[in-house]
Length: 288
Image 1: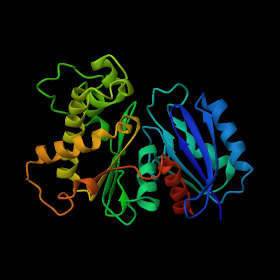
Image 2: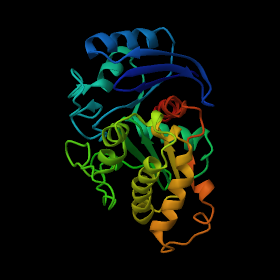
Image 3: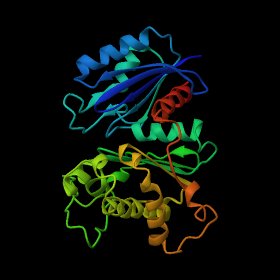
Image 4: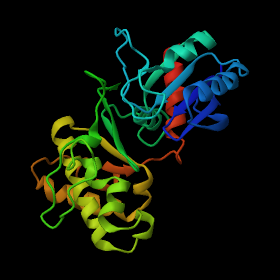
């Protein structure tokens, strides 16, 4: 069998074809314009491929409750034309095949625990840190949805005593996204992250906020691994700084064998930026 994968982002839609082993045989990228333009183009692509099922990992917020009348909808996004859009319904009607559906970051998490270096683990958190910050949670082998789905990027932070920046988020200011996402870095320091690579103070402060978030997650979810992805994490010097910050802020309150080996506990994504697409393949397989 072959499966379709759609990693639906706010900037681009990545459509791909793969097999049960997560092997991607082809993929294309389509700009995320108005759905009246973008969705028919994607449907036409998948109609030619004779796929058994389609997995969609999508930007949100989303309605993931199968019992809801708006299951499969993108809900309150500011992306023009996409608010309250029935993305699952559009593909189901056109393709008449099973559809798997979840958040974009849950897709990346699912790809990592199915095909990546975290294969076999059942309690994992994936955080993507870029233009925004999002998080996916797997607990006891199942992706966590709950009332809606986790919004880890908007957990409130205790600002660092040396940081006068109030925060970029229009909803909360001092949430993780407001203090540590790419736009916050640029607003605070007056330059993009890639142009600040040699400024130690930038990354020490960034590690403070990301480390604080991870400590919160360790204390609430007790994951077996934390995976960090996204554009900001291309600054690889951050990993050691974050590990040190987590150890400092935990202050030996939680001591386990996993936490004694931070290099294998807080890790980068392992699938060369294909984890989202590979997670979509797994969503399609599960939908069948």
